[in-house]
Amino acid sequence: MAHRPSIQVVRATARRDTAVDAARRLEGEQALQSLRRMIGLEQVKRTVEELLALQRISVRKRAAGLRTQPQTLHMVFRGNPGTGKSSVARLLGRILHGVGLLERGHLVEVERADLVGEYIGHTALKTRAAIRRALGGVLFVDEAYALARGGERDFGREAIDTLVKSIEDRREEVLVVFAGYPREMDRFMASNPGLTSRLPILLDFPDYHPQDLLRIAEDLLGQQDCHLEPLARDRLEVLLREADRRGGIYSGNARLARNLVEGALRRQALRLDAERSWRRSDLATVVAADLPDLGTVLPHRAEAGGYEVPEGAFFA
Image (cartoon, rainbow, N blue to C red; front, side, top):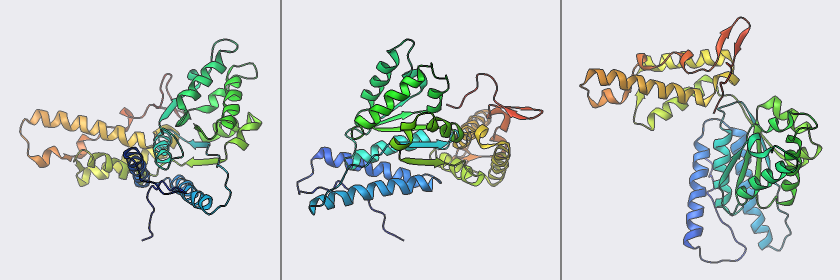
């Protein structure tokens, strides 16, 4: 098995690590291991490994008297709900903080309402304030395409322009991630000529296959010392395949697995509470009857032409 390097804060001149250095490196290492354990996301993982390798080699080049230039780290995340975009952004901040590329490594998550104001000049103030909060960490702009929806006179355009300028001016102080659905993000990138050149890293977050979601569900149960009996595992696989047939954008991906697990644990608790007497194995086992129906965890309803999201439904 190939050696997988750990977080390293490499310096051109030797000095003793402080307790703060050690804590930062440990936090970055833990975040890196968490990313490596995530199911799927191979392109994402490879890109992060490239960034870490580049940091290590850049420091060694400078120690050898060779010139280097800071890399632009701003990114675009394309993927449907529940594919891990915000989770990866949070881990990425901690990882890059661990190797010294980000001063704090925290995540500031914003959407259109956090950036777009109500009158002329208000949007630039709100957007700059969000950037200031994110300095030293990651500014995660969720559903970024919503900024370009309102047409030429909409204040969302002003937010985009302000972000584009700040991306260039403060590219070594903050990592900006624009995230959203694949097709909508493609249109968003085309809405401003400055976006493509300033966002050089494009990462795709594909929908999970049913077998991947089954592994995620079992991992979630394992974190609570629970497991599926064989018939429950078979039933859960059937539910996940049916959700996949209906379409990834509506299934919620990993969130569907989480919702099914949480629903199963609630139903298990109700069943066990009624029995009043249990063995330890009973408390740790989810049976087929504990699994909820798919319709109770999916926010869409059947229509003649397919499935649509009810008014007011959303994916958190």
